[in-house]
Length: 244
Image 1 (cartoon, rainbow, N blue to C red):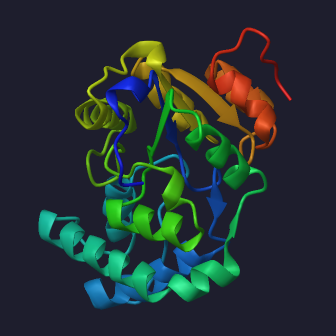
Image 2: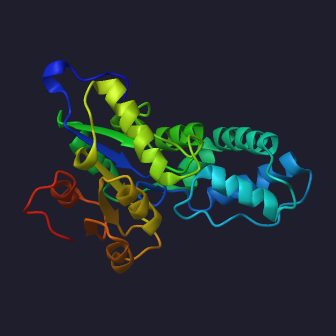
C-alpha cells in the first residue's frame, strides 16, 4: 500500500493488525528458520526457542540466545536479526506452501481497505522485514500501510509499539489517531494488554491458542471466534456489534 489518502478521504480510524495467528499461520516454518540460523550465529547446536506468544522479536531473540548458551549482547542480537531476515527471505516458497492465510482474513482486509475512513497497518512482534515478507508471501501487503505500522525491532515493549504506529500513521495521513481512533486486533492476552495500556480499543480474535474466555478475561472490548466480515462492526465501533 503505497498511496496516501487525499484530504477529502482522510481516515478517521487506524486499524492495527497482529500478524501471526491473527492473519496468518506459518505452521512451523518460523521454528524451522530459528533452528537453521541460530547455529550459524552462535556456533552452537540449536537447543531451544523462547516462548513466542504475544512477544516482540527483541525479547524472543534475547531469551533464545540465552537458552542456547550465548549472552544477548547488542551485537549478537543484531547478527541474529539479520540472519532471521535472510532466513525468511530464503524460505519464501516454503512459507507460502506450508503456511496459510487464516480463513476470512483477506476478505476482511479487502473490505476495510475499500473504506476511505479506515487506515490499516500492522502491529506485530515480528522484525520489520520479516513482517513484510510474511504479508507479501500471502498477498496481504496490498491492504496494509507498512510504513504506518510498528514492529518487534522498534521496541521491546509491545504497548510502546502502539504509540509508534500511531505517530507513523499520523505522519502518513495528517490525522491524529489517539485513543479510540485506533483499534488493535490480536489473538493473545498480551495483544490485549498492550492495547489497553496504550489506551486504544482492542478486538480479540480467538484464532490462535487463546480462547474467547481468555481474551475476554484479559479485557478485550470485543471478541470474535474467527475472522469474517461480521467483525467489521466491532472494528468500526458500531453499537449493534456483538460477539460471534
